[in-house]
Amino acid sequence: MSDRDLSSLPSRLESLIQQYHQIELENKRLRAERATWEAERTRLLEQHNRLSQKLERYGKDHS
Image (cartoon, rainbow, N blue to C red; front, side, top):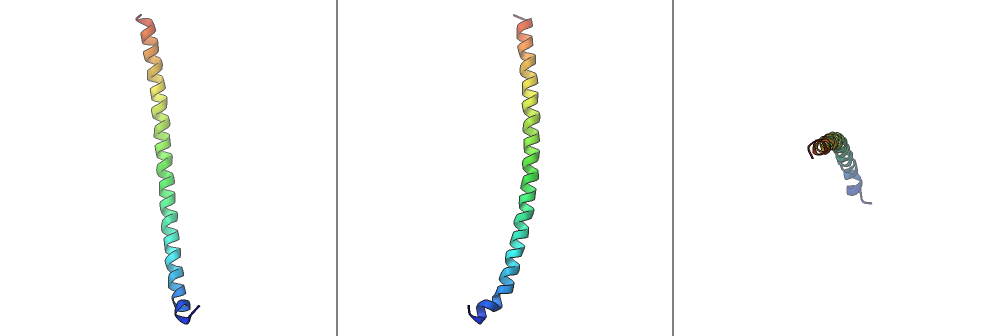
């Protein structure tokens, strides 16, 4: 490794550390977003099931 390579090493390392922290924050944001979408999906599936059951009962009562 040359002197020039060694002298640029600290700045390259700092850049990698900054990139790591940015990716880490983005990962946390995406995980939180995923949890929100999963909760919404669960809520919608439960709502769908309740409505399906109501329609089923309605069909039996009116047939």
